[in-house]
Length: 306
Image (cartoon, rainbow, N blue to C red; front, side, top):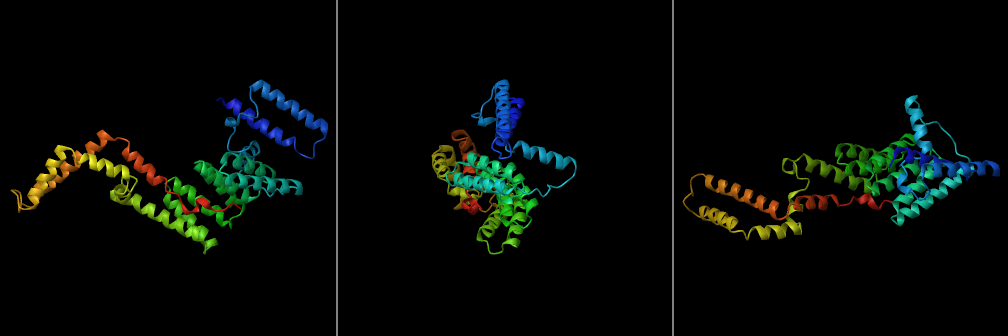
């Protein structure tokens, strides 16, 4: 997929949006249609090539570039009453797509709403929710930052930022945003619950026993795949022999009373044998367990759109 095609697709999207403007006369709209046809023919693209779309509209990219280079903030540009009404309609359409779990279409609607009204924090925040549903967490945090920049008192933007950061394993930052959300909305049970989840995940990530694993022991023991694998490994004669030796020592065998060194050695050997059997019989088990834990959703996943 060439960069030129994606750029041309964005330009065509921009021009097509302009054809719906009430400020253009019939001749001007016809000229835009001709320009669109020329670009589509030249770059061999069409409106059906949705895979060429980028997260931000051309107008957003242009404005962000200007404000970043000139060290300026987004100006207070008021949308016309007509544009504001149309943007609200598009937002509602996007909300309906979210309910239907059609997240890509929701993003498209929210983006069009943003093009019509650049300073409505709700549109950015709703698009952030749609991006998070698709796993586009970087885009989600970018939209939350825009929403907060427009309205620093918008608690939902802080909450959704916290969700995206938690999904990115940035627990410390997530905790900060959840706390900010609670300052603005102290009675919100969703923010309280998600804050506890982020704090627990940070605790687990900081625990020495969690290093390199990404899941706690309780999740491991309760996992059906692990239980099945453990039962299979315990049928191995070598493991049975090791365990039998450990039990003999524990009840007064030759190594009893010598400080338990033989028991420890046998335990380590059994553990190594156990790990090797798991690796040989089911090398994907650990990754499956990780995915199992990651799949646990936040309480904010069903959060209502604005």
